[in-house]
Length: 141
Image 1 (cartoon, rainbow, N blue to C red):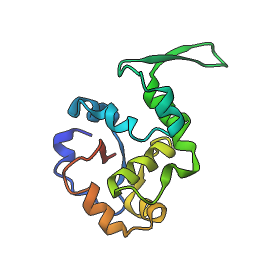
Image 2: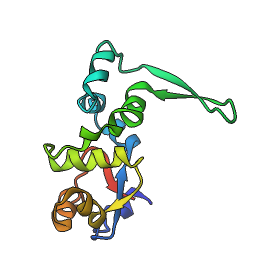
Image 3: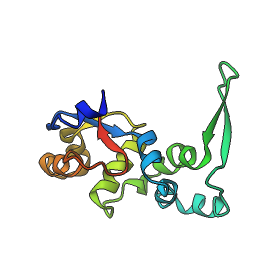
């Protein structure tokens, strides 16, 4: 959807959201510092000397196709987000919402669905992520 048009549409409880990583990368030069803070202790040690430009090759076992991906984001999504303590109740609401999108593969969710996962009122979630300001790339779909 054209961003000028989407800015005029007020999200509702049923509006789906997801993380727009491209928007976030363009808006926040420190986005990888934020992601790094979510790494599990094992990967915080392993990636201590990580260069923010490091990429890794992924090979599709079916096709042999090689894809270059960001090492930090891949490690976070494929390992750290799958750890039981990743969704601890100690995070700020925006951080918790962001983590849910990492865990679910960035599948769009609405405020009602997020409410069931966070144990927070859907209206509060909507006021937080649907109020016009974009936090951590979380935007309406």
